[in-house]
Length: 373
Image (cartoon, rainbow, N blue to C red; front, top):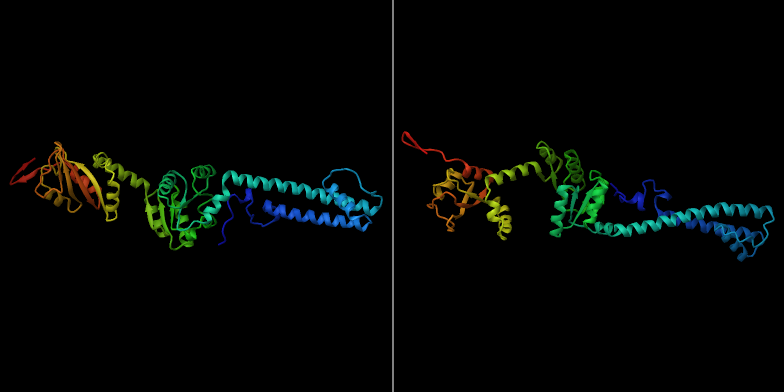
């Protein structure tokens, strides 16, 4: 499918679909110059044919088309000369009006392009390769653009709302104003050589449509799609998405983690190396969390080995920090968990399951026929 014209084309010189002369100020200017050259040469030749010297004929045509009105250099006293002069006035003056308008349009074109930096932006977009395409400059798009900028990862934003597109340009991001659901706009963002596309729109139907179009245009493209409703996840996968992110689900899970792991942020937040460690662990499906052993927690008072067995492989204990300042790194299986201990866990699988185990109330233990709390 042919590439779409620039979104600024209809206003600032892009080629119109009809391909007519009025579609581009530059085309209009060049066409009008050719027209005026033909009028000047033809009118001058007519006066020369009537017996005028070439210099007088050219001067007469020049003063006529510019409407100077200095007077006739020679008498216009024949029917031919009068009709020829009328023709020169009509064709020449009309051409000058159009030429003046074309010059104003071209001047405005380059002034606006210089002011908005559109020439530079279009050139940089044309040079993109192995880049990311962000569809939508909403809350997710803003944060994603900021993170990719800090990582120096090349990307281009597609945003249909002019105000948001201008906001993105003001932030220094390469931006295309247009509908991401249109294949022409995706082609303009150089989807053929892009590495990843992010469908970050809050509209599930639009994200599904973008995914379908993008997958058709670039079969090797990695597509990460956003979904609002849980039922949209399967539709996005069927449309060709590689990854589906459900912000509502992630937000709820994060809030649950803060409830179950309230000590994680305060303990790990100040350690600079934690980000790298967590990233390396995430590559193997693991994560770091910190829990506090409650006074009546389900695992309070048991040994580390027993706690890990009850977790059934969901976690293992790597460090215990106690109230007195004692820190036990790589505790053995016989170390008992005491009330108030801060326990650093490497969590595998469901982090919420690990938190639920530690935060569950202690169950009474059965000894013969008696239950001891």
